[in-house]
Figure 1 (cartoon, rainbow, N blue to C red):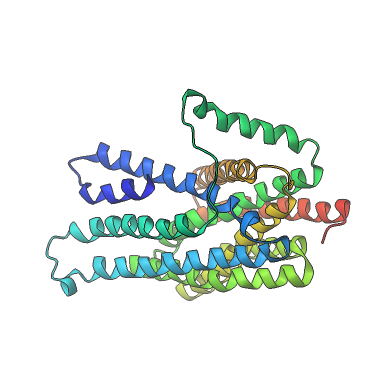
Figure 2: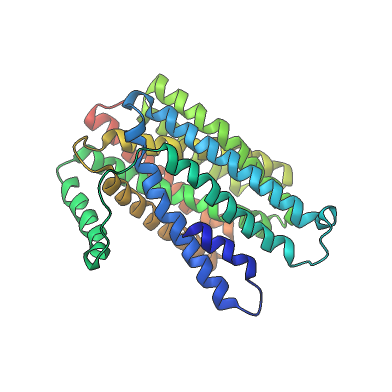
Length: 330
């Protein structure tokens, strides 16, 4: 669904706005849905002792793949004459098509090698509501799983900060620092490539000091990033900040997934639990970006919104520390 919808954007232009929006919505739906299954495979393909490393490898390869495709598409968009393209609208439309083909192609590798569900898929009227019943079941079970409940609450708050930074970093550079498109593109690439090393770094930290301690280090670093960003006024300073963001972004994402995977009951369907995890993340994104935009609207500056992001990370850090002390987990 995601690959087809993304490829369909090749035919999107100013004359069919509704078509383009519809394709984008279905593409986003396919992408978000695929992440649930992608994440839920972790406890099925890796032992608990290897989940931090495998999770880090998954994020690292994802960053590598997305960066390579981004660079290829940017070359076509910025230098169309190299490819004999004279139609200005063709390069960005080709980029959508390439994303769809890339997505579809690597999905085949996934379908071939990952464990297959032996059960028969039955689709009926009850299928629509089954997902909601599964989420409700996980919610009820969480009441007796205090450790998992505490971790989800902590991850909810720091995810509000992480995901908001991912969405508004380029916008901050554009509005507050007046960066040009080329500089913003470089910023995105810096974050993407550095995140590769960051994922492995925090996998090492988790092995050396434990998951919760490594996540605490990440949250403390994020608080420092929010404070530093308030005082950033030059391009070089922004690039240094982007480097730091990339380092902890890849780490906190991969480590959050593997930590959650270790806390899931072994007797339970992992897909249902990761569906719940994904819903929590999406709610955090909505609330995080909404609070960021609201503060900017009220104060007239995106810099003031950084205090809200810093507060989210402080709350997440506090809950992680309480989790470590209360449950005596590393």
